[in-house]
View 1 (tube, rainbow over the protein chains, first blue to last red):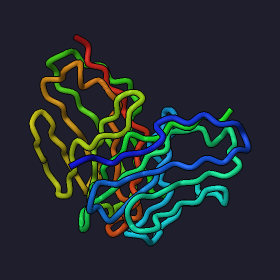
View 2: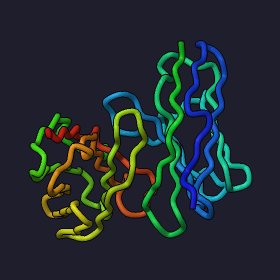
View 3: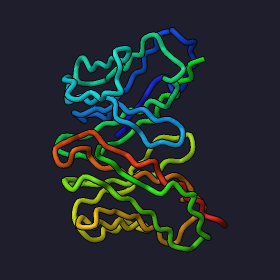
View 4: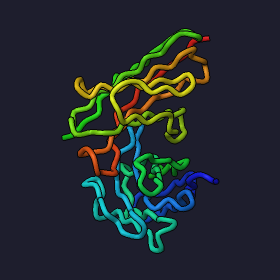
Length: 113
Length: 113
């Protein structure tokens, strides 16, 4: 059973550009989460999907951020008009049905210049 | 504001010693707790979960939960240099039924050969 995968692993972009990240959860995990982590901090929750429905969104998720999980499988996180403050590690995690345990992918490290 | 607090360290222990990592939480409704290990530049890796008061052992790791005092700890016996990492404590936000995890900032552990 493969783990959570994320692409790309690294992204360097210029301020003002749009970026999109992809997450493929563990097969048959129905819940999928996005977190953001900056240096010296623990991961901060961004949003959560159960199947294709987006059920929770953090106040951290500004209007420039949007996430989708169109068929209840993979998910995408898009950041529009990136800012230097968006530089962070973006982590995806998934959980099986009826379990709270979350398994993290390798993350996408974003650097906004 | 529901919080999870950890001593950021660094905590240094000699090889072979017991490392003790502590975490306190503010939400009395929290029912489950998770310890993750995170190597520098990598994503969090689940070590243990604990749901009931008392101890839970898994190999060299023991998680301890005291709901009355609102703390959870992780003991690592026979510490190895490969245990050197940041250890993150996490609990579901807003207690039972929430799926978003609130993380502490992590405790950096260094095991000295």
